Amino acid sequence: NAGVTQTPKFRVLKTGQSMTLLCAQDMNHEYMYWYRQDPGMGLRLIHYSVGEGTTAKGEVPDGYNVSRLKKQNFLLGLESAAPSQTSVYFCASRPLVSYNSPLHFGNGTRLTVT
Amino acid sequence: GQQVMQIPQYQHVQEGEDFTTYCNSSTTLSNIQWYKQRPGGHPVFLIQLVKSGEVKKQKRLTFQFGEAKKNSSLHITATQTTDVGTYFCVGDTGRRALTFGSGTRLQVQP
Image (cartoon, rainbow over all chains, first blue to last red; front, side, top):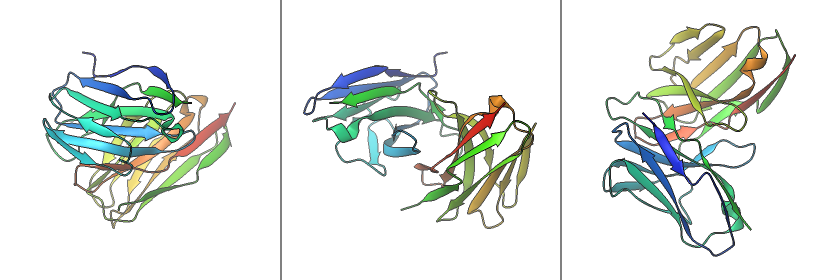
């Protein structure tokens, strides 16, 4: 049971380039989340999804897009990367069984935009 | 929007000393969760508190949820070097989005 898998683990982009971060979970969780964590900071919610085909904005959605075409996958896209998007990106998921279920995190993607 | 503040931001203790971090939400919470993140790692779930005034213990860790369900605390008794990391509270208002606190980084001097 792999849990939550994020790819890639590391990436360096030039300003203006685009990329997609993939999050895959094999726990049949309904809820999925994308967070970013800047050095010495907490995690800030970018976008989240409460089910296949649905997405919603979090605290810091600008510059990012997401898609949840399949229940197990949640994609985070950067259309035109900026240095301010240099960060560690974490994906998390949790089940719908009740409102009090913990988040399961992936190992993160370290993104540098030069 | 909902804000969750934690204090202190950083604490450096000698091994064996106690440690406490406090979490305050701007809104009433359905429940609060606590996570620990080791340097270079991802957040790992520690515990969840649901009831007003609830107190839970995990070995040397004691978690409390305030009566008004807007604040919480984590207390570690007799810290060890394995306690090093950043501790986050996560406020759940029941609206599906989970807001992380700013975190408290704990450093333990052997």
